[in-house]
Length: 296
Image (cartoon, rainbow, N blue to C red; front, side, top):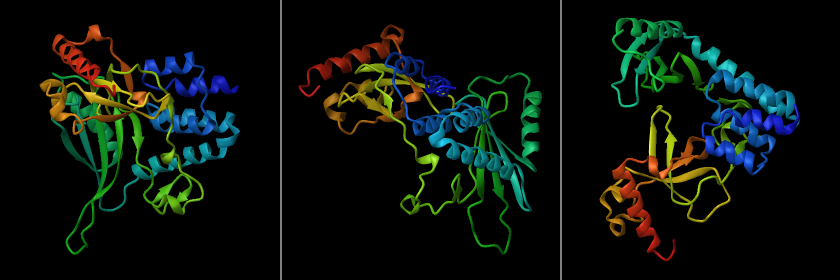
């Protein structure tokens, strides 16, 4: 597979249509290290992550060995998570939509937790799984009398609708490179978790945007690119529901206003005419205020 096709295969996993289109239109080129970071951080599922990492192992010489280590580490992490020792149990948490009450169930094994997901929908058949449904299975250690206090969480995995495995916590105190001292300055080889990818700027200044949150929800706000950067790893966004935009007391709140740093692959433009009328009014009011400030 030639480099351009490999990049296209890897970047196809990005959620943002606008970002993918900008990458193609600008003929933007990522390094093989960048592609490793994209595959690991932005693949929508565990299975797709392994598939993309395997492509990098086979067709990206400079990161081939690193990708292979990541695959092995991910597989061993899942195997270790599924295997519970004495005094270890699993807590299944179910949220049918982002704002729903989180249901919780204790399960003896990982497979039992998966089985209980099916049982949950059989029991509550008046409801149904949604695209935004999320399941978290957390492995816990049972604390006993006479033992020293310790945190009981041993890691968790996340599943999306259809019980699709999204991610699983890595082996404790270990990265794909082996034992992890938790001090990056002590490592000769950077681990994949520390790869930060820059993307081409793909949003016009003051663009209304929506972004995809980890809980499956989609949120809305205004993107600002203060320094007119040509590349960025995250988008600076002021959510529409913040006091700055809803109250319109711009001078009072500017500088201490709430904002979000959202990684570029999870952000896309929303046409102004698709905004509800109230949000559209707030958006135009904010833009008018920015126009009146010399620095903008």
